[in-house]
Length: 281
Image (tube, rainbow, N blue to C red):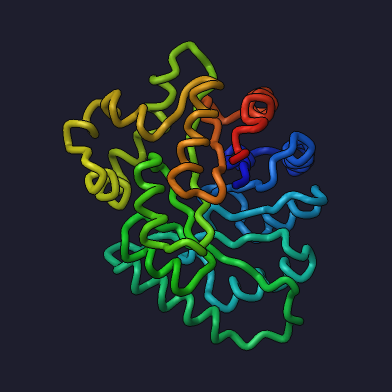
């Protein structure tokens, strides 16, 4: 069991500040650093910047979007980073195309990556990849064609179901959103959750499989739903990390939600203290 940091907050920040923050996350003792790819830097470029700024921590894409680059480009970048930083780059892969069949699309993309003829030395240890996976079909694909899965915006109940589908050996790395402030915590959580509850049909479908209904999606999310997918306060966050561990997670990456776009370095420091020992069996 390990604990990492997941963040969108590097987007829009100067490279020097991003490097400094990444080095501090490593110094705080976290063993993985995850970042998303949406409006900001291209994922493989961002990964290279973070790997160069650190010396031990695993840098993971959460996720690199398959719709933004060819399979050959992804395979080449993954192998190059894995050779340059042995054992320290983890490719999280996913994304959606309008009207596509996500499982079939990702399967075809993995086929393209695996068939890529690259004049790049093989990396040792071998490059690793995980898939953004929520439903049983994608989880099964993650077990078959990747090293595991990276579920996002899920409660521990989903973690238990994912472990059952993946089997005992696949790597299960779960994102957990958290709010540390005591003032307006649920308001912050609802603002962050809105995009998933209002626009992301795959997240809505996943939550419905867990027993949530349209009534839970209304008004920014019911208290029941928000409390299930987002943890509050230092004690509540530590308890949630342990709950994911007990449900079968190998790794929990904690995303601090602040309601703004600043780098939450103060909160990361508080988390390092609050989570010390939380990953212990």
